[in-house]
Every structure is written in structure tokens, then in C-alpha cells.
Image (cartoon, rainbow, N blue to C red; front, side, top):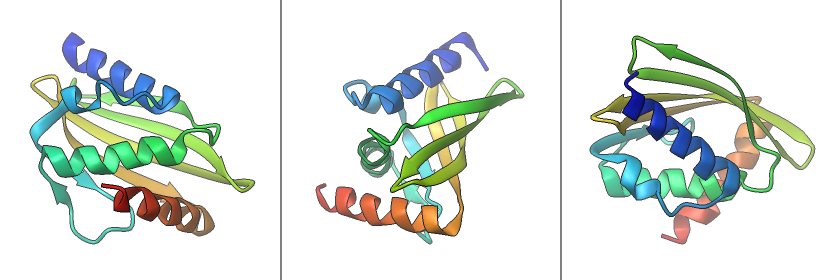
Length: 131
């Protein structure tokens, strides 16, 4: 991952941990794609990806969200394991983030357990309606 991509990941981590989305639009590629663990079709384009990532930031804020481990692969792909708590249910998952031109080009989220997925999705649906 180039130094600029590492910087992009650092900005993303700061956004998700603080809930401050001011820089979010600046780190998303125009042709970005978001893959939700519950939405059937990929969400394509900067505006849609912003909508989903912004909703995720709001959903996980205040839920003791933390990245617990990460792997950088072939200097352009970042895997980050995370956890958070929703009504005493530990939700854990992996964010797969692929950067291009120092911007987030692809973002996939994998979640577990099923009760956690349900909790996250119920909150995400409410946030997505706000857009």
C-alpha cells in the first residue's frame, strides 16, 4: 500500500472511531463500490458509498467499536478485523478495503454472529432512511 493509501486508511480509522465524518467524502473514489453483508446488490458510486459508510459510522459510534487486527496485502488491499457491542451482543467482522489512487475504491463488510447482523442492520436501515 502506498504511503497515501496508508494515510487514507488512517483517516478512515479516525472517522469510524471518532464519529467525525468531515473527511469521509474526500477519501472515497468516484467509482467506489460498497458490498453490504445484508444488501443483495453492490452499491456503486461515490454518493452511494458515502451514504453507506456514513450510516455505518453513525451506527457503530458509541458501540465500543475497535479495530483489533489488520493485514495489508500486495500494497493495495487492507483487511481489518473489528468488534463492537449492540445490546450486550459482541458483533465482530472484517472490513475489506481496496484503495486505488489513494482513495477507497472497494469496501466489503463481513459480520458475525447472526444476532449481531440483525442488530446492525436494524440500526443501519434507520440511518439510511435519513439520506
